[in-house]
Image 1 (tube, helix red, strand yellow):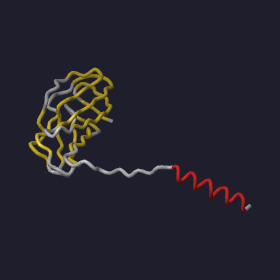
Image 2 (cartoon, one colour):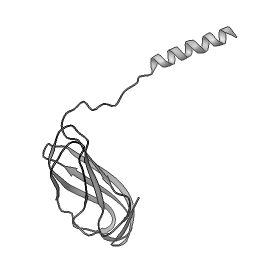
Image 3 (cartoon, one colour):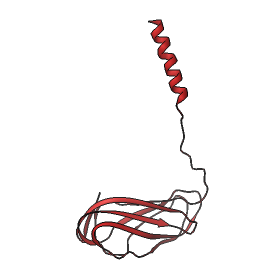
Image 4 (cartoon, one colour):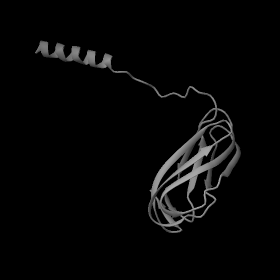
Amino acid sequence: MKKRIVCIVVSLMFLLTSLTFSVATHNESGPVLEVRILTGFQFPNPSFRVDNIGDETAHNIKLTDITVNGSILYNNREMKIADEMEPSDWDISSANSWFIGYGVFSMVLTVTCDEGVFYSDKTNGLIIGPFMFIL
């Protein structure tokens, strides 16, 4: 019985020393943008939320790209979201184009700022005419 306990303890010691633990930290300074496409019913275009989770102000925040796979007609135009966004600020915006289509789709939105930071979010949904349900 003692041998089993000693073997288990030694095995656990070797196992725990072989594991590496990492802690997620934000070491870079500057703005960090995060975009989330809002879920649920949308009409006639998708809404999204942009957060600055960094430690510096982001300037000239823009929606620069919308990529859609599916049977959807839309006009992709660059859109200014805000002149500047302080750390921990957020904004909710909608794309400046109607979306019309039928069936399932996938969509990627990309947001950028003057500091060279960009962030994208991908989602799936269903569209019937101008009515969207985003998952």
